[in-house]
Length: 292
Image (tube, rainbow, N blue to C red):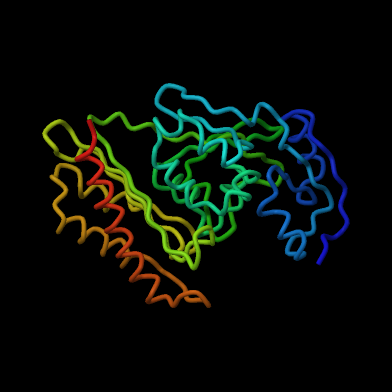
């Protein structure tokens, strides 16, 4: 199939893009890498009257560390983020998530912001953002607002973005624990396919080996990627015994509301969620042992 006819404009600046969105409203869609939008246009799942290209905007392609946050511009290509030493050093979980995103060809064009705005329940970057409690910057002609990832993702393929807003950047907290470890686990039909279920964990401990901070999240097993903050807090103050990690993983899976499809039944997704959550927690704990 071919996309329905549309008008095209290349934004000259972020302000110009926001002006176009304000002018055209729901008739307009932003495009950067196009790895999610173009297939949807071709299948006529979307038929916007206007496409506004923001891919070439330098102000959306920066990666920087600001105080205790890694700031990634919305139009940064996934392959660029994956190769950036600041990402690997300051938020290693993000690098591990990017390893699972699509294939090399899609990562070469797909953008960090595009994946987050697409809000696929199985998307690895959405899981990383929810797990780490990233903050997303949204800009319109009315100004800029900051939204927590947990509030940004509101349902399958749904975000809190207003029709006149553009995602500007994602700000990932940098953990400053004495030692920290992270892991990202995923099961898919083939590497690069959408996850049937994914799970991620990040743990921090003090010099005595006592947990001071923890995060756990699961994707692909519900309407959106989900972080389990309350369960993760149960790990704080412990020595991360395997029995406790297993219990937390099982409780996280029990809280999910998975659905079945051609790839997996709801029961199988719940089972995978428990298995992968445990693997992620154990993998993060294993990295703690290897930390300097």
